Length: 115
Image 1 (tube, rainbow, N blue to C red):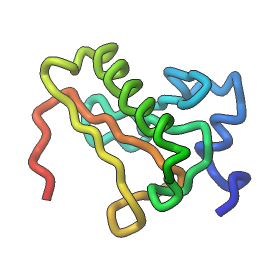
Image 2: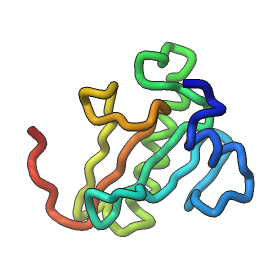
Image 3: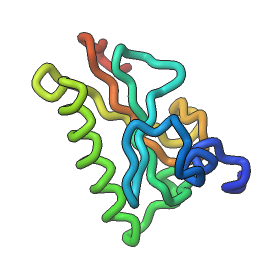
């Protein structure tokens, strides 16, 4: 996959795209189009990284920033105190559907244990 074929890169590359509910110089946040919880957001780095397999020491700052933004989004959604789940899928067997690293934030109801 090239960045030309990546739906997330298309959204990131369009500064007026309506999908992001948050955008800064390192990440965007969008609502998942197939939500698994009442609140289901995706925190996506602006840099195209196909998966964790492409993350090295140079990406430590962006990885940390994704978690800081996730907490901010949980706070904005009113989920910090009740709880939320952060999930990062690695590869097809895990359920990763888009080959662009992203972090799922799910909240809004009691979530079942993961199997």
